[in-house]
Length: 163
Image (tube, rainbow, N blue to C red):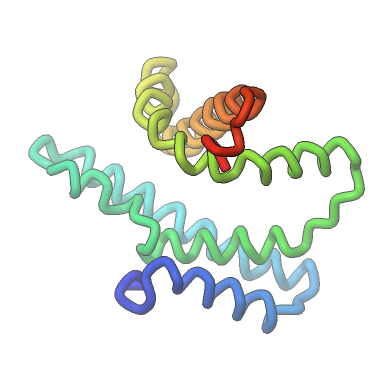
């Protein structure tokens, strides 16, 4: 749906609109974002459970509820964006970690896909409950991708590899 409107550029438009038009209090922000995120998450969860219950589902069908431009992803993205706008960081340690994350961002984007499948399989192997499977896989993928990218960034001429 969102893809047909503007594709990934639609998220730029959404970010611009939410950044300029939503100067809400913290209470109002939570009252809007918590339901938005929960609805998006439960649509993803229900769709994923439905698809995995069908033994004949195609690969495209399995990934249907994980597409970036789907309404459920839009709801969760808007919620996270609105919440992150309210965060004020003063800790030097966290600022350094975020600066490193920014430096490694392109490399994370490039390598994360190599860790998605193994992270998911590992999360299944350790017995993660189905509702937590995607968040646990996401955290594992993020940690592995950031670690790998950080190590590569220490190589000579790494900026030509990871940005």
